[in-house]
Image (cartoon, rainbow, N blue to C red):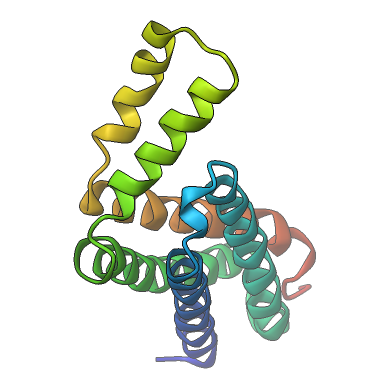
Length: 163
């Protein structure tokens, strides 16, 4: 494995570990029962993802072309996604098995609290009540790969070997 790949794998592992730890922290502090905080988590995870891609591509900029940087971002994203998937699944299936039900209950109360009619609350709740550990973990993993790839494509324009 060349140095660029080593950097991508290391940064991907760091990305997965940080986002996974943040998810566990939110669940451990029962913050998932605040309907706004899961969306804030997604925003924070995205910012962390872009920052990690930026740092990784800065470290590989002198050795990689634009396409090489995109490849580095993809590898970083896939490594991070594997860890994000595993940590999310472990968190919501094993450590906090009531996570999705508690979130749905909090969401239902919040929707009713803003005065939505009962039938609109029920329509909104379908997705929340059908959430699964695998589905949630897959969404996080897919978001990690897509964010890493898009960030690498954009950052790689500026952070690359200049021939």
